[in-house]
Length: 317
View 1 (cartoon, helix red, strand yellow):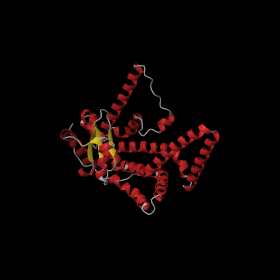
View 2 (cartoon, one colour; view 1 turned 60 degrees about the vertical axis):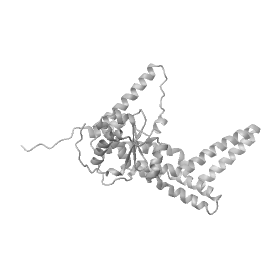
View 3 (tube, helix red, strand yellow; view 1 turned 45 degrees about the horizontal axis):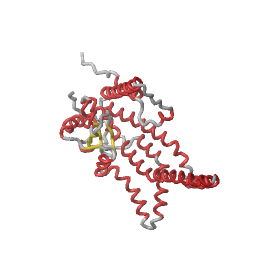
């Protein structure tokens, strides 16, 4: 497929932060405060040098746009790799067309490949766009360009770096919570083996600790059970905005083809499971609220306005 190259100037900035990215960061505020409390308490054991620990953790967020760190994250965490020369020859013209339409400089983002047989792509950290080997080899150029334009939308909107930044600043609190859960379970099991009174004492202790934490953070930890649902809603919104970015670059028909292809594959997998007598897992309403992606029908519905025939000016009579 040949593209008609042009520069659309959909966005004048190379990377930013839309309302979805900012909203995601704001939802991480309770997690950040909890993590700050944890890091602060740990730093007390080291005295004056402990302040350096706090400062190092706070400064660590800048690593989300540090290219060597991003490459290490892509290679060892996301299991991506740089494309081969053959893969680059396939990707380069498609990616160049996407960037040209968006008015974005070629060196802003890096392309990586995941050795996977699934149709998928990912926008990681501040500068990484990854695509699976299956998508690279099986998708026509137009559909591949639509997938890459969608991931570019995540970067232009700041969804990738803001998500990673929120995860980094929430990490100490999450680790501390897991450790406390494990300690509470072990202590409760050991104390219960001797007497019910011991178990009640443990419950009272951790209840008091939770109360003090909630009080110290002005009740913000009470919002923690709601945050996963709110974060999932933000993630679904980010997907629709990334679809809109691809559509604004005139890739809506190709993106719709990809979504329909994914929907068809999903339905075929369900039919095969049913024919083999395997029970099909049913997703509860709460589980759907925790989904990070909208379903295919929702995404296709939002692409609808971009799929309508556009009026063209008539030549003078």
